[in-house]
Figure 1: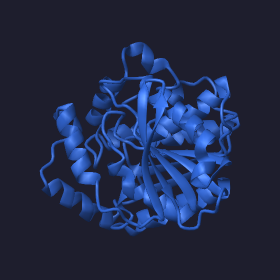
Figure 2: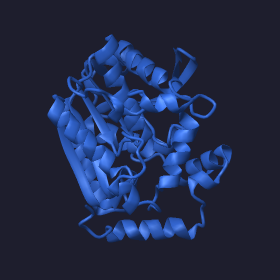
Figure 3: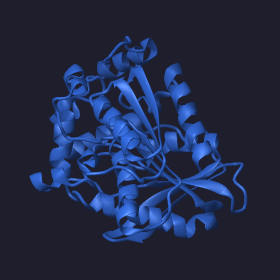
Amino acid sequence: MRAAELDPELATVIDELEALGLPEWNALSVDAARRVEDETFSGDPEPPVERVRDLAFEGPHGSVPVRVYRPTEAGAASARTLVYFHGGGWTLGTLDSVDGICRELATRTDAVVISVDYRLAPEHPFPIPVDEAVAAVEWAADTAASFGGDPDRLGVAGTSAGGTLALATGLYERAFGGPSLSGQFLLYPIAGNEFDTESYRENEEGPLLTRADMEWFYDQYLRSPVDAHNPFAVPLQAPNLGGLPPATVVTAGYDPLRDDGLALVDRFESEGTPVESRHYPALAHGFLSLADRVAAAETALSTVADDIRSRL
């Protein structure tokens, strides 16, 4: 399946990260992994955004922090609105660790971006992050106008585990009702939990994400083997993936999650959900956060921004 060589600019970045001597996520305690993730991926507040506010709303399990980005070109009450969920295997990640990509999406799409600091496993396992993701979408629909956003142009996005949460909000809306979503943007999402796919075998040792990491993340997130059959936790377990918001699915050739993401695309197409597949065979998991260093990632981020602008 992997027909391309690893992008040379990305290879340089990976070499630099490996030179830091950081253990794999699964070899660390949860607390240590969180510190390393935040130190590695938090950076300067770039690019500049007209207004950034740290707020919170009352969710089903308590207060949920959010960071709201209002782009320079947002009108009084007309900007598209995007609710964003960070990655980190439902175990790692903060508002700071995705600050850069949220700023990029806000400025490139003229969207009000609402980044959600949902509760993390193992202290708060499934379904708590899903509950808070759904609540965040409902809160965004109710309050978007106060930020200059348009609740009728509402979408969800997320990287990795955050992509799974974004997809879960669409599944929830279809099953139980709620705010109408105009698009879902799933950036190398976690869609399945079978660890013997071709992409897991090819990328067992990474780069940037390993099979053992994914097994560890699922161990933190799921309460029992029963949860592994719940489509709100593992979307490919859903009996039908039709009738969901129009989707963009981003996948990378050097990613253990590649084949699950491509399977998600196939099921969307065959079961009745409009989808754009954005596959990058020479890139690896997490590459969109490296757009300032990797030209191919910059191109991919621009394509995602174009999809958001066209859908919302």
